[in-house]
Amino acid sequence: MRLVQYKDTAGAQHVAVVEDQDTLIALGGVSTTRELAGIAIGQGITMIEAAKARIGEERLDYNAVAAEGRLLAPITHADPAHFLVTGTGLTHLGSASARANMHTSGTKAADETDSMKMFRMGVEGGKPKAGETGVQPEWFYKGDGSIVATPGGDMPSPSFALDGSEEPEIAAIYVIDQDGNPVRIGFAIGNEFSDHVTERQNYLYLAHSKLRACSMGPELLLGDLPSHVEGTSRLYRDGKVIWEKPFLSGEDNMSHTLANLEYHHFKYDLFCRPGDVHAHFFGTATLSFADGIKTRDGDEFEIESPLFGRALRNRLKTQAERKVVVKTI
Image (tube, rainbow, N blue to C red):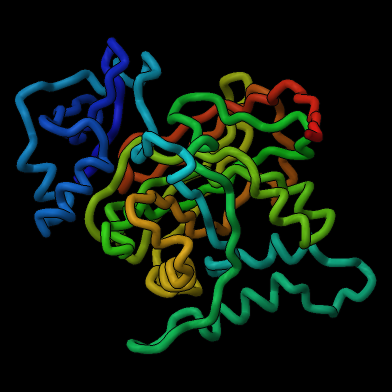
């Protein structure tokens, strides 16, 4: 089952089940996926069971909702500060080569970069045996809920950015229950948009390069994630595809288990605050930047996978410069 969040023509928020590529079925009695998750947690049932109990008779034209810009990200929070967006990298088999090339000093070709070392650590220890703890992955913070672009909307890039390029990834969505336990409610296809030129200057700039917008959805996949996921990432310019490449995800194509990635995020008490929402990106091995593509304002990113239904699309939009003024009082 897959869910979407959307606004009606009056601006009120709703949740619907995706019946097919053209039709949505509205859920009754809930207005957000977070509210639905709260019901499922409280009743000790699955998200699918909670959604089935609220399926109504109202059907909507999915294409019209999308064309009118009324689709929302598959998870939201009334207070964006309580929606944390994070991620992990060097998690996919084949993901290390492009990153290592960005960080090679050029002085000693035989030297192994920190990226390659971390990747090898994941290959060797990222899939621990039951009851054991695996090696820590790379981890980064992207921002709070305010940086999540809506499906079909603009992907804002700051005026000072040196690059703005897509990263096709799967994001897992979590709600922290009242006892401080993380509860995974589903998965969404995502664009973990980043500034790779800034990152390439120095690996210690990775944190800066990740403080950018992102997008996910529009559909929330309920249940478990298959171990093998296939998708396609495309870049459009002036309505034409200028770059296209398939990508793979799921544990069969990763150097870490999802459980290991989840453990090393939620082991911190900071990320187990009751009522918070988390979107955690699981990494990728496919980048247009790695193929020498330089994005431009107005380019459109498209990331799709049949497993996640409708494709995720966003347009690159450079923001106006904002002068930084620090006051002293």
